[in-house]
Length: 165
Image (cartoon, rainbow, N blue to C red; front, top):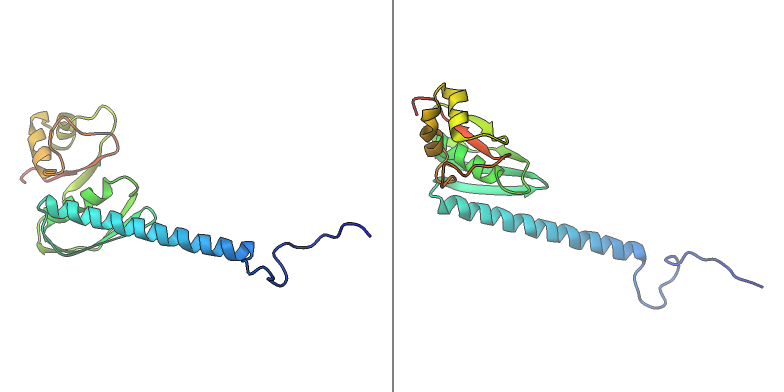
């Protein structure tokens, strides 16, 4: 006689166990459920942060899938909408914000600037306004997310409003 080879997970289940494929499918489903729960928790945390910052958005909804966050609702004004996008986008794990928000009171859109190493609000103001002393305009436009004009970091995205704002 000798040794005979069989496929371990094929055939009748006389021990009442599950095949590796069934276990893998359950593990994948458990992982997907855990990811979904983590995304829902992150979305709830972002919603709470936006509320705590006093940003007024009716019917705010945030859905996270992978590294993309979809944001919907009705913002009071354009600056509120942009600040919500920045709160969400400047969060770890989010690479893309799908902005589906409406705006109640229309106003001109601001530009966005991604901070690079060596940037200061003064340097950014010089670039956009031609005057480094206009840095408070940028600081105010990014409140309440910014607490200190000297505390910006590479990779952070900032609102750069029109000079008259």
